Length: 115
Image (cartoon, rainbow, N blue to C red):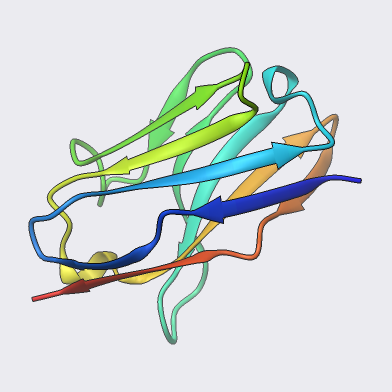
């Protein structure tokens, strides 16, 4: 059974940093395309950052230069380093994994950025 478990969310002041983690079980991360999404209150879920099994990454324009996605395949964990946080980054952040064509989601972790 596949599980994605996010951690690292919390309350931070604007300009601060947080690092989110997504621990995967039931899949071999090295063969999975992973991504971070977020959903703010009243808004649709949006892609924040993605990391492919081949090593490429891409980011939403709104977070380029501030967020960095990385992975440790040995630990089966994906990270999202978030710097220079803004109030508009407030959202529930979800880990997503696509493994041999099947999509999996974590339950999310809340990030709140105060002004």
